Length: 508
Image (cartoon, rainbow, N blue to C red; front, side, top):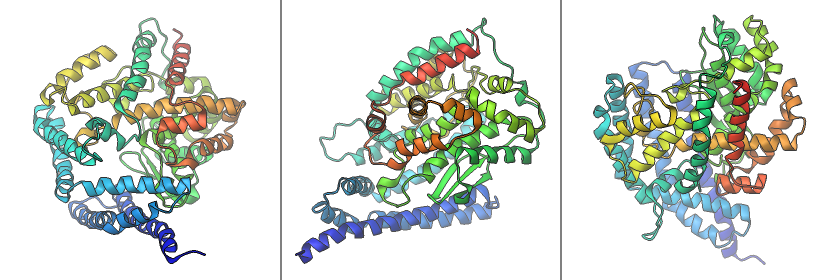
């Protein structure tokens, strides 16, 4: 016979899920407003101001519901009776988020939000003036505020995690700086000499001519829609739009939206962006449809692995261009060979700008930023010394002299948005994508033949089985890979992929 007390305790878990679902639905409503702003809303001063008020009002409601004592009480009650491992994980994740929110004083949260807006303005002005000194004081304030928030997240006085480790946890859960150092040092040691070899005077570079010309925007859109749907993006549970900057937004697993951008004088960047965002969207569409904390994407690194799996390990492969070349030629009125397109899309060169970098040189751009932000967060690098450190390290890594702050330490928005710990996830995702591609090919022996034919269903199903369906059931990317692939994140697969591909392509 069940007592009223035990019934109450078991009900506490269901009540908690209802509270969390209510917060989740409000957050999804906020995402609708944000998507509309980025894609559909008329852009004028009055509409932007009105949308800002709407978003702020909704954010205040979400915050108040997120920190209400009732959630803490339900967590405590449910903790005493829940025995199912999955439910325990739900409680663990819910408690972590709840305690993070209640530990940050309202005044500090408001100050952080206001500072982000102010520092963004200072960053844009400094970048326009090509003068880092104009951004120094706002950046110093951003760093101090981020450290203050991170210290609030410490669970107890004897919590000995570094501040940077805590900031990393916001984006890459369970991955500490020492582990990232280990991974990145291995990648850096291999790539610096490889880049010099591949991009040296004796190498033979492929032509980019097939990417250049005049291409109808509508035909480019149709090309991208054809390929991303073939990949497995379900447009009956999402949509594809155009925006200034490509992005993916999930309003729920049954409504996942992606955007891309297109240029008349070059067609591949639009396709690459669409495949990249399509990878993100396929992940979101195949998460469990419930709105529990466990049913969300594991981390930014895992998310990036999904986009880069499709963009690079599918979309930059020889086999893909056997499939895609006839589609490209049909839509764009061209007459290129698969070999010419494969070479053109894999063209590599050294660049000052991260977002313009190719897959061979991009890792060093990320490592540069990780090492600099780690050091200034840990007090080992002063803000005024950032430009000199940036320029020296860039020359060491890529052999180029940075000509200006605009093309150097002022090029990214992240530090003005207090997003410290975000940069490493780009490269962690790239390494994870290569490892997934290795094991996918091992489990699907005819994977290359399937790519040649544009048969991606089994590949997508493999990713759903190994990644998508698990959400946040594992505590870290390492733990997830250990359980599903048999080993933690291993950058050797990524290094081998780049070495083999580019030494063959550039005949060096």
